[in-house]
Image 1 (cartoon, helix red, strand yellow):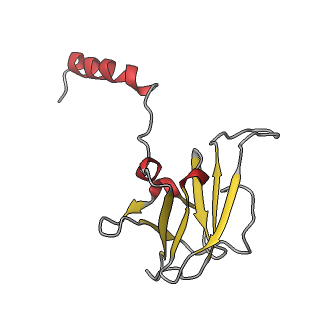
Image 2 (cartoon, rainbow, N blue to C red; image 1 turned 45 degrees about the horizontal axis):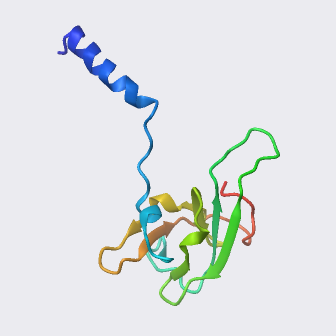
Image 3 (cartoon, rainbow, N blue to C red; image 1 turned 135 degrees about the horizontal axis):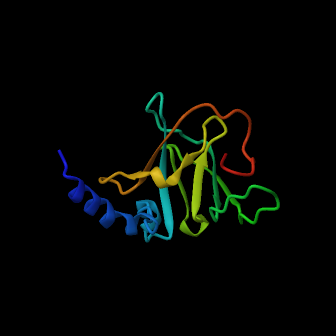
Amino acid sequence: MFRPAVLLLAIGLALPSIGNAQPPAAPIYQDTADTLRIRLIDAASGQPLRNAEVEVYSDNGIRCVRAPCATDGRTWRDHSDDRGVVAFPASALGAVNHIRTPAHEFFDLARARRDPTSGTWMVRLLAGMAGGLGAQGAG
């Protein structure tokens, strides 16, 4: 059991840092390569998404209650190769970034993990996005 004085001291020491806490930068944003390589994998089957149409949506992270909202949204499109890997310029990344295919939901690239063997970023996409690419925003 904690003593009240010790508990208050612990809370008091923690409070100044709470308001200034910044989430750590995602590792993909720390990648120094000019070109990022991401392997797309279907989350249900575990299979690479070969030759898939791919969209990366990026913006500055600003979210507004009313329009107009200057999010500086950008969309980059290409196709994955026969191994399910898509390569795109690191300069396409903004503060907030999502990737998807026409048959899969947006995936937050901050959650991508690097394969220690190949150095390629790994993304597991969930099926469920209906329709083609081209939607504005990462909903």
